Every structure is written in structure tokens, then in C-alpha cells.
Image (tube, rainbow, N blue to C red):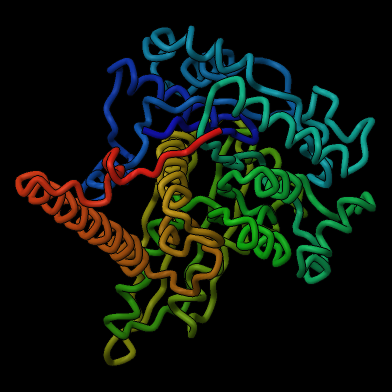
Length: 438
């Protein structure tokens, strides 16, 4: 079994902390795998790394500890439960020893204000920042004896990159890093470092990450699988399931209004309109992709501090049916932001490790169902995205079955030769070996 490390960007944040608590709780039989897509059939039939075997480390620009974050979540939000945090406390302390100082380059003023650890760029160029990120990944791999390290970005949302076409080639990205390009954001530097070290990468945020064409070219050339962008966990998940219903029944959606409120650090960061822009775009594109004739599609996100890690979304759908009959549908989604996201982080780590072992490179399109704005995929219908993942699994299982059959045939042929006393291509007998002299 491959030894796998999961390197979390934003390691002391709520999502990362919940993922690590959950994985260690599974290992200690404090919880089960409810919420993990890869825990159900047919995905469970793949030879995926066990969640409980994951080694964790990461980068952050905030002080504190993973254990401290877990205890705050338990106290304020009730998820995870305090008893679970206590059961994995020693594991979290050990993980925290592997959290390194990260970068907040071009993450916006909101994130810069949250950083209470001097980010790497304080006294280094972009090239030196990347080299330090790479060194941290190398050290983690070496000291923990890992075969694979998967990098997952769960940090807060950055402002959008202006003129992203400037980074359309690998050479352009490399040149920007070497020349200390000020517009290249932290998420893309993390992706650059990951690909340079042969590490699979997932961008669970709407930040640029590996979406820049030059980085996608780099991943292909380095033979590294990656996926993104922006984890699909709550309101957007519901939209991707509901919108096809209206399309399939030929009901004309005149307006779809969505209002989201949340109270965690991500909510505070999204108070800045520059950071919010990318998030709104990824959430809005889902409906535009499924209902191209929608009359009005708007999403709002507001910070409500008292909610903590809980988020609420209210959606109002105004639609028209037969005989010009106007109707409406409303729903309210209320959930724990991190408890929804954390199992998907673990799923992605498992599936990207599997893809890496199979020698797959570049964008993993079959992982579209995990993201609001999936790279390389225009399909937003959730059921069709699930079918893409199912088809991938069926192909993998069929490949394994063929490999097993070939192995069985090979073993059978060997057994037949043994019964006949035929050594096949074994070593030559002494009589057939010519003598040699010094």
C-alpha cells in the first residue's frame, strides 16, 4: 500500500482541521466514513489509500495550532464533538509540528490582515518563496517516508487574477516566478511548487490555483494529475441537482435568487469585494451552464459573525409553466461549512493518489462533481457529473480485471511448464554455460 501524505494549504483553518480530525477519528474508530463519496460502491472497490493511513502536514500564515482550531470548532459549533477532539489530540499535536510558514502573496488585504505569522514573501522573492515551498514538500516526503504527497488548497479565497492570459504557457509562468511577478497569487505558487515536486494538486477554492493555462501545461509535462476549482458542498450542490429538473420538464426559470450568510474566516474574507468576485462567479456559472435562458440569476454572500462555521442559504426560484402559469419554489440550506467540505478533501486526496499511481496526468475531468467550476468540464448537471465519475471507476475496475486475468494466465502457463519439467526461460544448465577464464 502506498504511503500517502496530504499537505494542506491553510492547515490551521476550519476545513483543514475538520479533515484531519475526521481522518484521525476514523483511524481511532471514533466515527465512520459517512460523507465520503469514496466510501460507497463502486468507489470503495478501487484500491484507494485508506483515509486512516494519511500523514498530514501543511502551510499557514496564522499562528495557533491545529488542536487549538479543533477545540474552538467544538466549543463554538459543536462539530466536531469535544470528545472526538480529545480522542485525537495527540495526533493533532504531532501534525502541528509539520505545519510550516506559508505565503499570502497577492491574496488581498483581508487575508494579509489575518496573517499573524510573517509570510515567506516578507524577505524573499517569488522564486525563493517557491523554492521554500518545494523544500517543505521534499522534507515532509523524506522525513515521513512517503511515496506520494497530495497538495490540497483549502485557504481563503484570493482576488481574481487580472489578465490571466499572460500565464498561458509554462515558460510564461516560470518567467513570472523568476522575475518576481507581483500578480501571480499564492495559490498558483503552491500549485507550481507541487507540480515541480511531482505532487498531485487539488484547488478546493475559487482562487486561480492551477487553472492558469501555463500551470496546466506544466502538470501535463510533469505527469502530475490535478483537479479544481471551488468545492461544491451546499447551495451550489443543490442547484446542480435541481436546475436540471426545470430544464428537463421545460419549465422556464425567470429568476433564481440566492442569498448566503456565513460566519467563519472565509465569510470575513469575502467581505472584500475583490475576494468575493471569484466566489460569486463560480456559484453563478452553475445555473448559466444548465439554464442558458434563465432570466435573472444572482447570488449574494454576506458575513454574519454569530454563525461561526455554520452557513445558511435561502433560494427563491420564480418559474413559468404551461399556459403561462407563474409558480415559485423556495428552499433553505443550513449546514456546517467544514463538515460538508472535509470529507470531499479526503476523497480528492484518495482519488488523486489513485490517478497518480495509474500514471494519469493533467486535469482529472471525472472529478467534476466535486467542484463548482470544474476545470476542463462544461457540464454542470450533477447527475451527469456523477456518471462521469462512475464511468471512470468502471473503466478502472475493468482494467484491473484484465490485468488479473493476464496474471492468472501467466501463472497457469508457469504451472504447466513445471508439470512438464520445462524451466522455460530460466537460467542455463551448467552444461550449457561456457567456461570462462580470468
